[in-house]
Image (cartoon, rainbow, N blue to C red; front, side, top):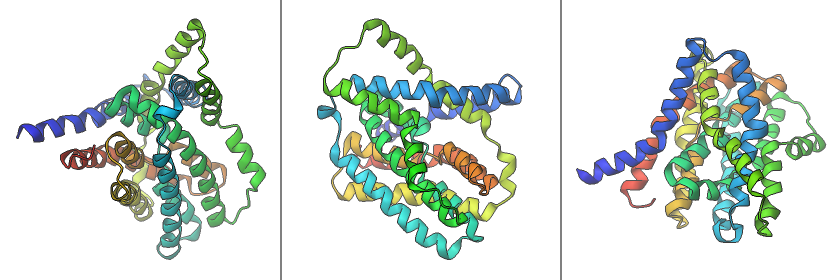
Length: 316
């Protein structure tokens, strides 16, 4: 009984704070304390400044050669690509209309790595989890951005072009923050104390602000429409993708923090950035919003269950 309560306690220590802040965001939005302008401005601040700063600080302070697990990163990239290809094949036969296939596929494989996934890792492993997850996050983000454009372009019959995809990646603030941090880490450059402390203040507000804005932007009323495709993408995102990726990692011998990061990142909900991309490309934005809302709510439960199972098996 004591062991079970210990496992349960660890599980809720990972997902509980996320639930509280998301719920607070929902409550503050309903009371009018968080307005549309605050949500838009806060989200932009997180994406363009706060989160890149957090990733920069984390990587710059870390000796990449000692903390980065090349095997974990390589597996995560290959598994993500394989899962994407499998989802494309399945969607071809079961998702109707055709123009919604890309939205469903992206909703199922593209995780909210930068906010909820990273928050899961920090809650589970502290600074060690942040350091180990940061480089993984950056490289997988590049891949999922490319695959997101490809799947939406295919289903909407729109050509984006390699140049436009490359520009989108090159101007992504998260990627810029990570690339700037890599030489600092590799060369063991000591940053000025003033700059480091100032950056730390900005980094510290990232996850609380991001989770508040995420909670405040959720709209569960829209779930009444597009229910079949929404349910399909949600099951894929919260059950099939984490299960397949985690089972493969276990089979290959990943354990401890590496396995935990792979599972936590995969089990995080569908990325809010996917909605922006769908809307910009003229896709079914309502369906994308439904998937984000339902997976954000469901991820708290499925991630808690996944953590309990791996913890009880002594794998993490």
